[in-house]
Image 1 (cartoon, rainbow, N blue to C red):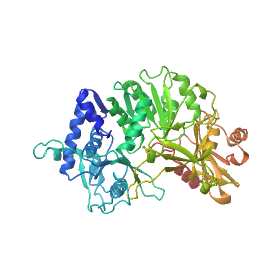
Image 2 (image 1 turned 90 degrees about the horizontal axis):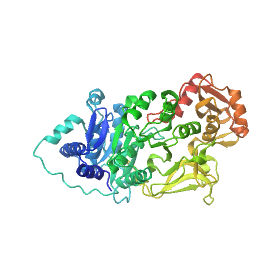
Image 3 (image 1 turned 180 degrees about the vertical axis):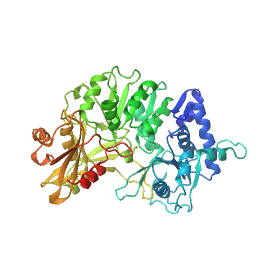
Image 4 (image 1 turned 60 degrees about the horizontal axis):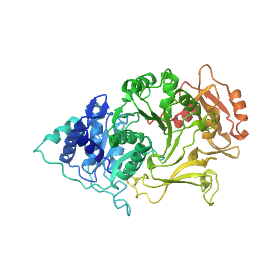
Length: 524
């Protein structure tokens, strides 16, 4: 099913059911459908047609959700950009996407200033997905308008029925921009089929129904939001948008879950760790409505998994994995078998209709090459959730190589071992920072940890940056003794630094680059 068909269906079947609750109000399915129709009319009046790109540069709101629906209804793809992005970066994204229109809220529009002229280039992914992606599809500068201006456009002229747009399942639906390794934003183009393959699997595995109340913690440009919105819309349930100012305010988030009656929570582990440590999430009885808690985006420290399982015996705990390019492609559910586990949770087994294999040919990172598939290797994904391609590049052909290293455990589940490009040769050995983190994170005085490499060659040193679990935390010698019982000598850290909290990227993941820069700035 196409991603915009869900709302249309429930607007007919249960028009009075709440669809979206947001800081700017709540709307029913009928109201969301009508708002999307009005915005679709505005987009058509602005010249948006099938195959175009519509940039959403605004805070999370009902209007923003409606704009996504509107773009899909006219056959366009939407491109969410967080409001924290400056105009210069947003312009680069709009140029790369080949945007026809940029829609923003009033506050953002007032402070954005002029948007640079953009040269439009053809995004990756077409229904045919054959040959190189066309460039220079239509030159020009995208229109910048507010939601109010778009709504006004939608009321100009006589009312006409919504023209049918024959959008195919393999047509682009949305583009999510990630930080490229070259410093230029990289647009991941995903189709209706890509999104629906994940959403429909996830909705089924979590048994999402109309009575559920899902939360949207992630920003719209982060792939976690795809589940929040479309799993709710598929079931006729409601999605509750967490305001940006509450995203990492632990006490307010805990109140949000309880006051809103959230039944399914989904976020990065960093948010849950903050809520447990500083927000009292696990104090007292479990939130009365909560029946499932899902985390993804980075490893969840195992000590917090144990705390959650003990405090919430009736809540399902799910660990999902998948880069933006594949949506969620593996899943693992915490069970009684995980009691006493000291290693991180596995990322589980293939899901969303995908096939996931481990390819040992990762010689660039020091591993073996040219071997048959084995129990350890790069995680490689193929199937319906894999992206169409990157904007401005040829379509994705064949399986997607994630650049992540995995290993099969004794039960046949995949363990995540870290990024191939984060692996280092240290003291003549290949070191996995993620494995070192897992050991240090299990120390009773450590609440959170990140392990980074500072320096290169003979000057390279392995740093542990820890958040103490109360008190002063462990010293370097204590961590060395602890690690020596669990790791080979070459994987024991050289230095340790205690911090109040780890820095986070805009998507809520640990900002390792910021840690390295800070260590280098103050001297190692």
